[in-house]
Image (cartoon, rainbow, N blue to C red; front, side, top):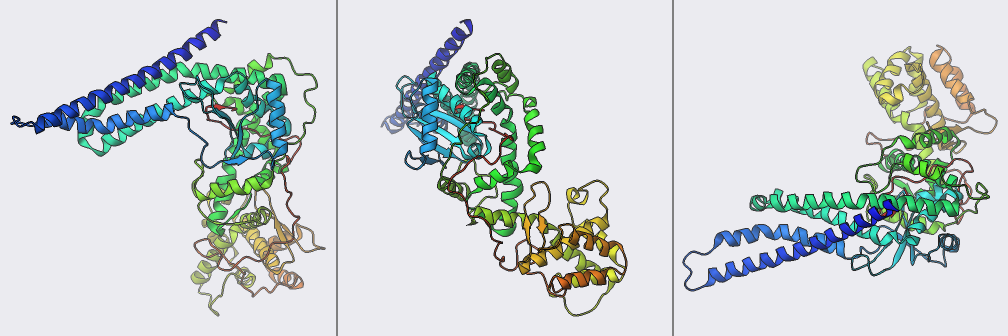
Length: 583
């Protein structure tokens, strides 16, 4: 009771502080107008001999300062409206999602939201466009990140939704939206005044006092609202635990940092590099991300990230308590009867992902990552094949440069080379130049690739590069293809009748044993590969392919809706930052 009373008092004080700020800004605007009118009137009076230039200059200097403060008032007073880069979800196209939300809303004792909007962030939040300091209710919106939909098991996704709807049932969204807008508006006003002062020496002379006032207001406002909002998060956790089960809510919280980090790594380590080198992006990046989440080779990594999630302390300005506190509070709650059963998947039509991806690639999404500019899209399954090939053939560019360097250094003459060929590599091996070639290749690789794997030496890298070159020629013929491996290079699926490691053994033997290159040439000829043929689509020095890609191998058609890609791996929500949000 005492804690609730203190939170209520803090909330009232924060609102009073905001009202006082509104009144202060209004008073300052009136004083500024009065001085401006008096200065202009005095300057235009017939009996005036010395125009009041100091007053007029002071008014001119204070104009951008007052504009920043007025902008803070406007930003905190008006509803924000729908966020940019989001997609509205209709009941007709996504009945399963709406049915789940309505069921959970009934469970926490509130009305369903007026709208559901999908985002490309690892985040979920609710907003209410309340007006008059939150006294008049407004339109309520649930924002749901598609990375959560594809990355969370159904039970944990329901726990996320129950938490967000719990904010509605406890009427948190009105104060939460106002506190968020107030904090953001005050910060924006400080930034506007700083920018104006940096651009104009006259403004800088008068900006110190107002900037100090705004900073003090911002600190006090956040100090008052932060404990209230953190208490609201704990209350929403209890509502979610009552409906979805305390253990399920705890599992989703433990998974938070795992899915957030996975999404960032997916964008930075897979989406962006392929866009830069190939100029292509998947039409549905979220379903491609689901393949990463469900990959068996990442299961142990996700488990480690989930186990270490509690090591991340809460940021000072974060409205959410630290994870350890939330988990300890959930541990005190009784488990819901029947918790742990299999929940029905919540399906979302894939057309929404394609629409949302356009905003992510075009730059209209506020959370768009650097490097994802306008590019051409391709079916996400074909893009996964391109990604596997890209990761597998990263050695070919350095290998081609190493071959040219050694040939030039050793004075090897012959017909002008048309491109990287198996024959050029075998010729250097035959002439006893395996170590110069291996060292030249290693010097062109980043340290993390050079030292990948314990005890990996220069000849190991050269054997791997020769294996990749043979595999690329087989893929070019259409008799083999690359499959995705999220923790290493793509894996070659060789022609029928050849074991996956056979070609790798051929390449390793040819590199290490003198005189074995002729045997490798016979093996390659038996696979109907011309060792003198340059590699189609060989990468140029800029990294782009010189020729067009060959068609991808046949793949199964995509499904019209999403379901969770795995059963027991549960990386979950990220560090969610919106007014009333899950993580």
